[in-house]
Amino acid sequence: MNYQCATLAAFLAVSWNCVSSVGAFSPPSSRAAASSPSVATTQKNMVATAPPMPGTASGSSSEVPLGWECDDEANCVQVPACDEEGCRTSLDVRIHGEWVDLSGWRKAHPAGAHWIDWYDGRDATEVMDAFHSEKARGMWQKLPKSSPEAVEVLSKQVADDSSTQVAFRELRDQLEADGWWERDFVHEAKLLAIWVGLVAGAAATAHTVAPISSVLLSLAMTNAGWLGHDFVHGVDKFCDRMRNFVCFGAGLGTTWWSDKHNKHHALTNEMGVDEDIATDPFLYTWAPDPKHDSPLRKIQHWIFFVPFSALFALWRYDTMQVAIEAVEQKRPGAKEELAGLLAHYFVLLTLFPFGVWFPAVFLSGLMSALIVTPTHQSEELFSDYQPDWVTAQFESTRNAVMTNPFSEWLWGGMQYQLEHHLFPSMPRSKYPALKPILTKFAQDNNIKGGYRESGEFEILKMNWDLYKEVAEADPVEGAPYSRGHGQLGAITLGFSPASKNAKVLQS
Image (cartoon, rainbow, N blue to C red; front, side, top):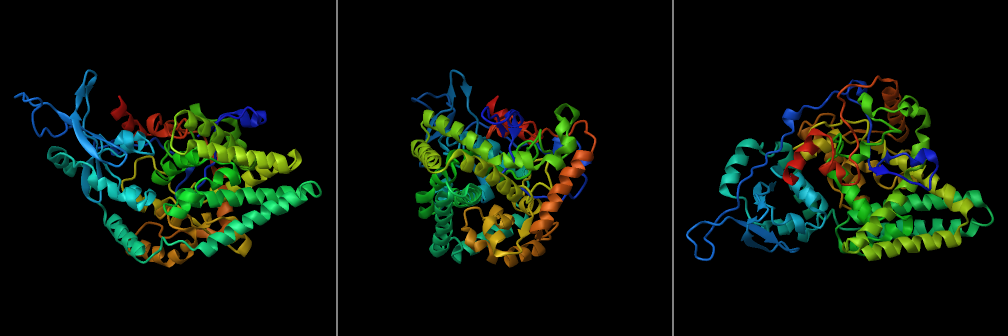
């Protein structure tokens, strides 16, 4: 994501795709030898078939093509497929082995039509299950089925679900039946009490021991970010009520977070699409094409802490931009979100002097970046779309093993990155017990690299080693371009082969 912040120093005013909220490092091959991706393997299986024509219009003997129009509850009616500008075609997506036509639902999709377009001619089962509530997961069954003609063509072009995907769906069903999504409210209360204590301690020392106050406030901001991360991902009633906590507690917006972060979860480590690995021009995770290079790359392993520290400031700036736009666009809940953000800044500026809150923002950014960057960036990067989402999560994610209770709390569940990526809506209190289950799953399904984990300091060193390796590498002609031009721009304006395919539906 490109951030431009006029209120920051000149170093930060340069456009930057910020270091994201989930990452991992362990280069399987030299990033110095990044090659241009193969377009041949990324083509989407879009079938431009007209919708079914069940009858004639107005008694006419000529057949009139009909399409679909759906409301927010996935209630669909047939409408003329053609108008004065042209005719819509079907938009076929596979969910749990069944092809459905989402052409009429795309505009009603709460998270935006771009997600629907991205999965045209693809399987979206794992993404559907991972991000949606029980109600939403049942709605797709009400949507119109794809035409027999489309199904016949797609069945020949799209690979069947892999054995790993099938096994994962069975695992998920079993975990749901066993109550793994039931929330531990005592655990939630403890985490919230710690946050309240940190804020109170910071306020009590704000005018007497400013350095201590800044440290406590930065810890409170970081903790609020992880709590908000849980609540925004969650799909239960408690999370619905707590959704805007991150606005008041951390000054971060739910709309910005959802738009940006869910794309990272769905398209993890896909070069040119996942903006969590698009951190140039200050930090590169692979050797770039000369035309996208920067002199800063040569010293990135020595200056990494500077852009790391800017993370929270940049997130806050972008949050306000998105929140104001959301109100102007009349997006659901936008006014409540903006009110929470304004309340956050009222309390922050009222209770804490500049000399406390300003360094706290940057210290919190440094801590957060050190936590979120090392769990993806050094693992496999993909130049092509990955149809097996489950295997891709294992191959692009590395967990961090904590050495003490403070680190266990400070990392906020991000040390269980694989568990979180496979089950993002599951309460994080359940993640530690998932390790033996996922370790066995990786073994049983022969997943390359298995269940990946390293010590908390080892994984940070791996991250730094990657920055150094890429800093010392020569630029590579034809290397993939990383930036997606905004939160959602990677899908519509991105430069990876996979993102180019998404433009077909909008041309």
